Image (cartoon, rainbow, N blue to C red):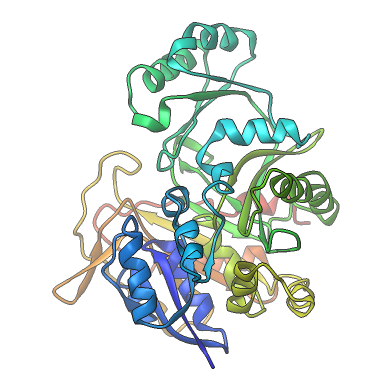
Length: 435
């Protein structure tokens, strides 16, 4: 009997998840809450608030949903997995205390220190210790990394080029309240130099499957200039993550995380996202996320050749089968590049409601995908409804990053809306590693 599935969320990551799940031979009806117009072409949309766990659980029972998959971080931090498990319902994602690896930067750093997991040097501060924070900044070399302790919708990490700038950001977080409760504590880190990469481990708490390593582009402008965003694009597999580096990441990071979490009574099931800096002294953790990354998911999932629904369901049950682990050990099925189209003004203030033209031009091309991130439907037309609007993903089944880049930008060329902005160098860093 095929399984009905519910995906929670409304962005490009959730569209990619729904798209991948729709390809599973064991899927029944797909639901998404609240979803978006692109997701609505593949799934039945449910008008549910992600904070309303009671109504979500009622919908799961009403629609005979066998597996719920959590997209964004906020439901995890608010304990939706715990609420489902109390009701005997199957859900993919870590419990609230396991997802603390993401929703508390202080916890994550202290956990890594306890379990000898490589990361940047740091100290954590509260409003009462702001003077200490200022002195700590003065003890470091520029640049400086300031992180809000809690979830801040992608706005909680600031890289400062001067000590005065760092002190000002610390004051704004701790005393100015610019991020509310999320900034009530801050972590000040030493700056890591090297190549960034992301690794996803789908785990049952003990065993795990690795998806294709990816690299995203956070800055708004070409050449990694301008302010940080939620992500302007990504590609996979990232050639900077060699097999040797991946083996080190497994040995020094992923395995110690899973063993450490289990030892502390926080067994970790779900997607463990490891944000890495590949430094001269080896891979070090920048951050953990307790769910699939965005926009990396839009490049990674199209390369997974196995049954993604089976993988996620087995993770949720706490038992990855040997067959699934073996089937997932193959090389990624090609190369993928995803370019994010954003509204003018993002990541600051921006206007919405502009008609998106050209989406139909992508529909007939099997390896060119338009993942909706911030869209809505107005009188039968798709319009912009967010900062990040679309992710145009191209897949080259021959494994050429260069060809995937070219195909993605050909796809971008067919799309237009008022104020559309995108980076023109997504994937360019990969070409430095290719002979």
